[in-house]
Each structure stands twice: as C-alpha cells, then as structure tokens.
Length: 254
Ligand code: SAH
Image (tube, rainbow, N blue to C red):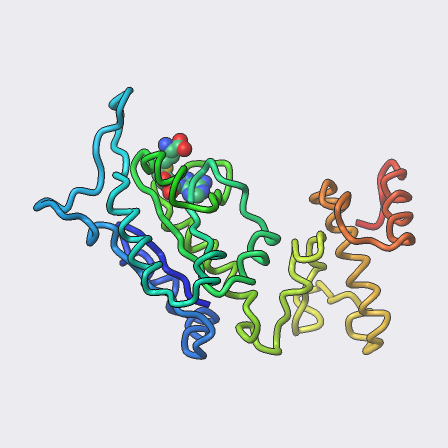
C-alpha cells in the first residue's frame, strides 16, 4: 500500500511512524508513506497557504490552490488508470464520517490512499466539494490540525495489512473487529500478589478456553458497550444468553 500525506507539518510524523510494527511494515515494503508539504505547492514569494475567511473574517482558512496542486501532483505519479479511479482522497475533518474499525478495514483494501490534513479554521470548501472523495473524523472533538487524526487512521489501517502483524498476533479478535470488545488478557506470572489468572486459562483445554474467551467478550461488551451487541454476529444461543443476562436485575457474572 502507498499512503501519501499532505500536511503543513511533515516533521510531526517522524516520531510516531518510526518504532515497532510500523517500521517493520515499511522495512518489509508492505507500506510506503510519502509526505508532501502543502507549502511546497505555493508560487508566491511568501509561500502563502492560508488566507482570511470570507464572511466572518475570523481565523484563517487553507487556500485551495496548493492543496489541489499537491493532490494532482501525487495523482500524476500513478500510472494505473483503475487505481486513480478508486483512489480515496481523504480529508481529515471533525465533520467527516466517524472513523471505526470497519472503515479501517475498508481502507486497508485499497492499494493507495491520499490523506489531506487541515489546519487553522479548516480548508476552503471547494477542496471538500471538488477534490476529496471522502471525509473522516476521528471523534466528536476538535483538534488543531489533521496530522494526529491522519496518524490514527494510518496506524489503524496499516496493522490490518496482510503480513504486518505477523503470525504472532491476529487482528481478528481485537475489539471492534467482530462487533465485540476483546476478552480479558493475562500473561505470566499465574499469581501476582494474591491475584490469580482464571484457572481455565491454565487448563490447557483449548476448546474450553475458546468458549471462555467468547463468553467473556460478550459479557464485557454487554457491560461496557451494550449497544454494540445489537449489530454483533452472535449465534442463537449467544443471543439467548445475552437476553437472559439483560433480564437479570443484577447480573452476577460480569
Ligand atoms: N473549523 C473547523 C475545525 C478546524 S480544526 C470546524 O469547525 O469544522 C483544524 C483542522 O484539524 C481541520 O481542518 C482538520 O483537518 C483537523 N481536525 C480537527 N478535528 C478533527 C477531528 N475530530 N477529526 C479529524 N480531523 C480533525
């Protein structure tokens, strides 16, 4: 996958993208990330990227020209017609669709993404109307720029690319991958202070352990994010289990 990020602050990405899984994905050539400074696509002496907002005049807005030119320059480097046709050009904005594991999965299927990071009061509306193909928000709050949002999107997408996590970890059980939160995790030692790891996990009985994990995932989701269960892929017995627990006035198990 190739990811092109348009930003006024490419240096912000240096730290977060270097360690661990991400670096490994780059080393293994599973992903390539290019940064494009929007300021490099200006033509005036002062490299102006923003201007006063029409109307209120409060705050500065990113001008359309450098953003259009930066995106067009990235697109001109793509040879395959069909890739251009499907290429997501994503504006990070608090007004976009709310980012989720589902959207991360959807984006991970593309061979190429372009991410546009806004700043100040945001970007000129014509970027939204005539350039980008998608708008993503990472939550109902306002950041000062799209860079942190782009990092969140890139990190969630890259770990889903085949080969990135390796065989030692699978994203399939992760919270939000199958509509459930993940079950509780333990590692050694089996007893820490006086707190023991649940006995079943030490039993070596793989079938029973798998059942326990599934049940714990359901219980945990019911307790913390019950609304997720409506869309989760549950068997008939599991649905009945959930209905029974919901019916109890003070469920004892979770
Ligand atoms: N005035 C705008 C907010 C601008 S914040 C509004 O009210 O909609 C400046 C930039 O930060 C935005 O252009 C966007 O790129 C980024 N940003 C802020 N909050 C964000 C969020 N929740 N998700 C994604 N990007 C965000």
